[in-house]
Image 1: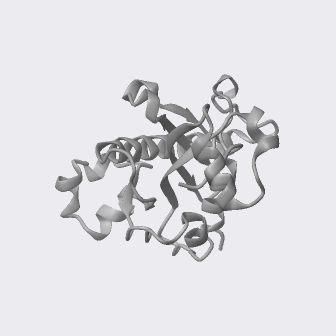
Image 2: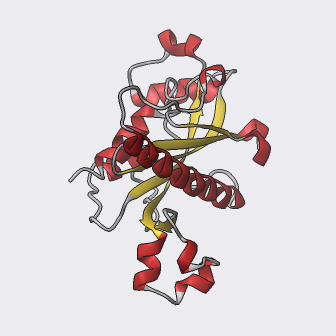
Amino acid sequence: MQTYPDVVRPVDDVTEPTDPDGMLPDEIDDVDEALAALKVAVREIEAYAAESGWDQQARLFALVPTSDLLAREPSLAEALGVDPDTAGESLTPVEQEPVPADHQLEDVLAQIMWPAEVLGCAAVVERLVLPPSADPEIPEDQDAAQEFASAHPERQEVRIVAGAVRGGTTYCALRLRSHDDDFAVVESPDLVPALLELLSGTLEQ
């Protein structure tokens, strides 16, 4: 696993998003709908990833509007357990080919550009996280940093699900290996800003 010691915000700082100042009501509604749909998709992916346990390779998902998917493939409605008439703004995660074991997810994302029919994307990745107090001691060399993190007494293993949709809305879910419980999953729009930036970059036209 690669080390991202600064990528996770302290839990005390995790808050629900507020409506941006200066936005028109219709724009706020669009943001709220996008966030609600993305939350559901991220939570679904997080639960799906949890079924596979730990020490898994990174995974990548396209997020497709459920209504568009059912319009192209009506037979999927029963398999997905979705009524086409009530699909609304929901998103369906479509898992992509596994990220090769010898590739970093970040390098893979740098080469991806999704087609227009894909509204968003999400990634599942396991990481070691260190407390902010360890920052001054982390070596610059990546291999040395990995060794340092692996040996640090305050290290935490986490599984992160990060998602982004066109328009800039993002959402994350994080599960600690030491608190591997569905009720202990931390959620926030911006837990992993570096990864979210990469995901959002794959959606730019």
